[in-house]
Length: 337
Image 1: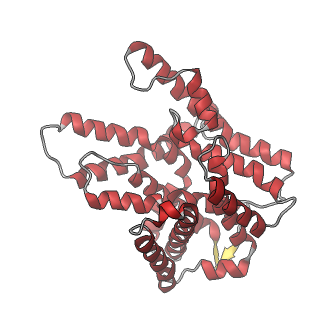
Image 2 (image 1 turned 180 degrees about the horizontal axis):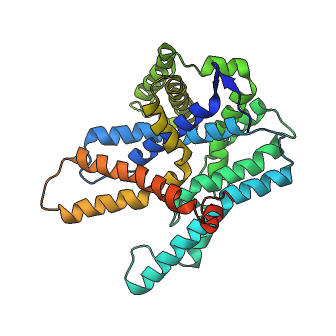
Image 3 (image 1 turned 90 degrees about the vertical axis):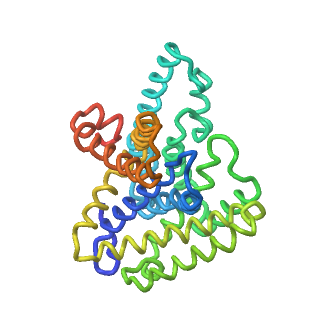
């Protein structure tokens, strides 16, 4: 894929770095203990306000409208997204079904679980698959909408729909709620002047979206405006928070120090596998600490650091050393073959 140059560099670097930062934030946000300190709960709240919008914006930025015929686009995205969706969902269904026959599970799976996965994955037995589900639907819906409306019109229409109807309805609710972020990414890609204004490698310019984000966060959340004006607030925080990460990523991509950049590039490259598998390793660490060291009061920060590190590193190694080496896993788990 040919990438646009921003500030004299290949944008692929900052996109991978942004994915790397984003997926680290996802793993951090998914770690919680009953004894989690107040500051950790606040950090998680901040992360949740923009971590997934970031990935939808990046997906939109990478999307080239009209590059493929619609049928070819659906085939490509089905292989990339639906193959992993089906294989991972099927594997975990089988594991939970067999386990439910052997021991008593709090949430056993049955045929209704499959329906829940397809209609409302975020409330199913595999909630992480909601992102894959929503992203595929966005790729299916957006090109059709573009046949009749321009990006700004679609964006405004979706905001209106989400304000009036919300996103708590089956199948396409999460897709329509997150498509505005996807369109923001498309607009940034298609408008080079806007891109140069919004995305900068100058560290001083990074302060602008960061300050905007934290001011908005501190003003909006304490007065409980989220419950009154929910979706516009989510859209504002998601967009500004994502732009903050994107600008930081662009600045990191410009650094001469290759160590930090190299680590984040690697993490970003394997971000989808980290997203899909991190909870297995993170939960294992959490359970392991609670069982092995249950009579020892270890610092929360130590447990969190080990859990987050394992949640990032082990899925990365899993893809690099196992999943990419066999055509079956490469095709059906990674959606690459």
